[in-house]
Length: 404
Ligand code: ADP
Ligand code: ASP
Ligand code: MG
Image 1 (cartoon, rainbow, N blue to C red):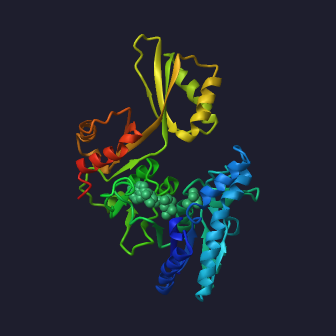
Image 2: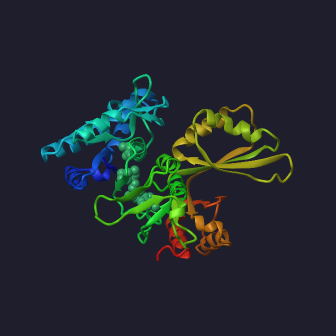
Image 3: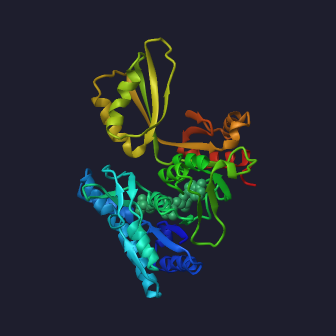
């Protein structure tokens, strides 16, 4: 049995018309004698609507019921796809996470998959059926429904490909593939034909939501090649694979950007061992993700300033925790709510000197002030005012010849 996993994102199943179109894609694989496992997201906008509903009840909606609520969107999409395939004369049925089952840990809202039982799916495939599996959800050892984090239908697809030893895993979405940058931000973005796991992982964790980052990490660890392509156009997409398979002469592969970041500076904290740990300990306990961190050199050897960035959604909670923190003293807190991180990513920078300079220089030519910098082997990130993001992306795209 040659198995293919086809994942469809929200816009790909966003209307009845779209469901009819993706049914044709599914059938084309069945006709090529593939045993097809479909993984579907909720129809676009549905998960957001469900989140809004929970907020109408209260802001700290029960975590376990939140997962029951949020997982509902995928149930609808799967039933519609399956119902349409049955209408067209194909054997199909929907599988919710608990029916597969997809077994997860108990971390509601952001669970990890521990194991996928493949027997039910395999039996159904062998009987000639096409299972339509709900992405983004699983069940924990207390028989409770869990969800796997925003955008995690990608993760479900990769993990199903892993446990079923699929020959192919294809992520169908609303863009041609992985592009050099978000085409919604820069219209000259170009499709990347082939990209390494490492670069894809950096791109998705630095804000390119075309792939959810956990899914890329698992694909990398398990050496699962996958393709990202459009369900709207029949063009060839992007193939994500190991570095060895790629011959690339570009210094930079892609540019990622974040939206909705915030920057906090604590002015005048004591410059002594343990202070940074005391500041960040309550954030970690409350699952607040801190991103970039800079500590200035102390001018007077007594006190210093610490700057960090985080998601805007976490800002209020973070400020409350800072104010409650009795272990630190400071003069004041400065906040900037309108900042974004722009990153250039590429394995090519390992062997090419001067990339940092070229990045900074092209931003300075556009008069863009850099607020914070962070680097790793294959990426350079800068924090800038959100208002400058389009300008920055366009300048960098040209500087590193990604338009060609
Ligand atoms: P789906 O619903 O199919 O999972 P998503 O909305 O999660 O789709 O991801 C696709 C979107 O990701 C695109 O519409 C695009 O705006 C955005 N995106 C951000 N960065 C990139 C990139 N580098 N390449 C392609 N798309 C990107
Ligand atoms: N429906 C979920 C979300 O909107 C999962 C996904 O789309 O992958 O986050
Ligand atoms: Mg997605």
